[in-house]
Length: 233
Ligand SMILES: [Zn+2]
Image (cartoon, rainbow, N blue to C red):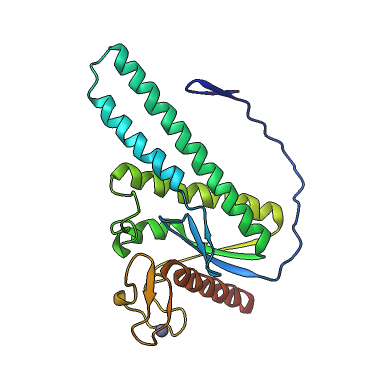
């Protein structure tokens, strides 16, 4: 049993649950983790556009600001603390729900799923501008929202790892550096290839794609190359 603010939860866990392998689909995908969508696949699908999560994140930021204005020990302050806690819990639930849905869709559709190595991604993410210049519709302005979105990728990868193992799917993590600025058709790598958060157009060959789908394609290619190299060794 666990209590989170005013709600009680029953947590069940089972040991030695047999894996339930899913039938093979013969398909492989790369997934790019982003801000506008939690993940975009190399097939161009956007999974979990977390609009509701962003709305909650905005409310949470407002509630935290409101809390700082309340006098210590006051009844209003107690209420404000409860509101912050409730919104934190809501964000956690929404994030977990989005992660489950996206991961389930991926393991159903693909035998092999290639994703970014999150430790490297977090180091390079700000340099590549994905979060620092997230586009107009992305509520990643505050450090708080940023940390909420960062945490979302970690939760998603944990859920994905668990579901992939249970379904007998193969997961491959790759170095995500340059995946967002490299052309998936000709390999030309330049910062200018990325016109906006969403638009990619190769300055060498003219290839146009959704920027995240182009990145996911590069991620897929890197993963399959790693796999071939491991098999050859
Ligand atoms: Zn190109």
